[in-house]
Length: 179
Image (cartoon, rainbow, N blue to C red):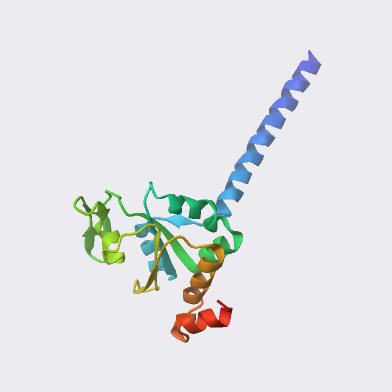
């Protein structure tokens, strides 16, 4: 009888311990990912603690978007730099959600099969994936279209994130990098 109680207590302890470890591993994994948020969440956070915005405009069916999620956006240096210097926004270009920004409502436009915010940010040039860089005051810095490798995205993230764009042209920056 005592042995069965001891086994029951030990197995319960092991189960609880394994459950707690699993939860902390999940939290650790989540903290090792880009901290994606909605556009409205990024705007709210930016109003409290200003940072640049990196907006990933994609769709659920975009193969190159999925490839970036599986490769470029999993790179630890990209994750670290993105989380430190940007509010990373994931914007589904085809969202039917209404997005409120600067006293304006952006809605889905069936004739374009896209949300007005995505249309506006990309100036109607809809290709996926596309990325928008905005400064802390929500001014557009630059769009960037197409799949980006780690070195390609890293260069652009640092160009805007470290304010190099204020002192150096992109072409000169690329030359300095040896590209």
